[in-house]
Length: 185
Image (tube, rainbow, N blue to C red):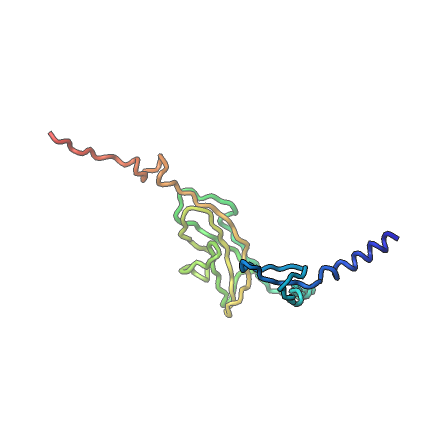
């Protein structure tokens, strides 16, 4: 018997919560909302609640997700992941494409997510000017129409340059010789 009463209560709760809403303005000009009627209150209709239905995507079938027979694989071979470059202004990047690129394919190097301009697009060797800090490098190969044929995973490397304020740095202003000022006689 208890479970029947409990079930009826559960079914009745949404109906009780879906009651009317009242709005009124008090003598101080403050707007109030309530589910209880009040003198000079207007019943307002809130409309249907907004809901969200996620977009349904079809699962790709195995044939569509398989790589084409002549697909390429790109990789950054140098620098290695997490490699440190102390006191460096440039970093050499080497890439590998398997099978070797042919036709009108172009290879681009990306530093920190941006294509580096001024680099050869028919080579697998690049020299990048870098500043101190953490950087990520990847290579992308595009066909003649600009479509991405392959893209390598990013490789993170670090350029370590001494701070100007380091005591051992010869460019530290504290390490510069001071010129004595002449004293008046």
